[in-house]
Length: 264
Figure (cartoon, rainbow, N blue to C red):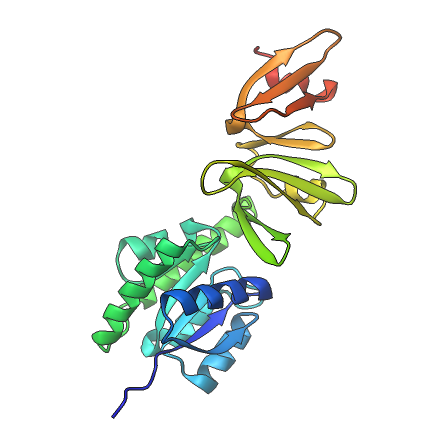
């Protein structure tokens, strides 16, 4: 008698990210059957109760009920993997080896490791145990982060390049520049080579979501990653130019932002 294939549910409020994860899982785990995709925590619970998948990939931060709340409902009835843009939400669970998580943008190698771990748990025929208190702790951490410091900084930006959805990690971005109705993202690809992409999100909106300790607005149309700066050249008449590591572009600094480099 042939064993039934493993089944999974994917829950994420971004449809493109659900599609990307499903495609990645098809590569690293072709036997896995995605039986349901949910847009939020409440839908994840409803679809789980209807389909009873063996594995649930839950985005931590979803409207309505969070992935943590959905996981609390699921309990020991399935293997849970958190998918999050903010690894502080799940790092404690992962460190204790009780629950697993992957960080957006999902990397092939990390996903393959997660799949291998879930397969081992499936062979043991028993989901992770003693998760209730840990889920409560994670829920409290999420509430504290939202209540005290607002949303965590943006960790990645989605960019459509031709027919491909590219997930660009914030750490890989050198600078962002307003370009008509778009924002131009200058970043480094997996080989460390300079690359560019256009996104529809206005620069003003993106700038407000980036980590202010890492990114600084230096011109009304330019935001730069401070780690990407090689040096800043001060010129006459309160002018300054930013030179970047490994790039030929020179970025202007507006007079109103010169105070960022006053110690030069």
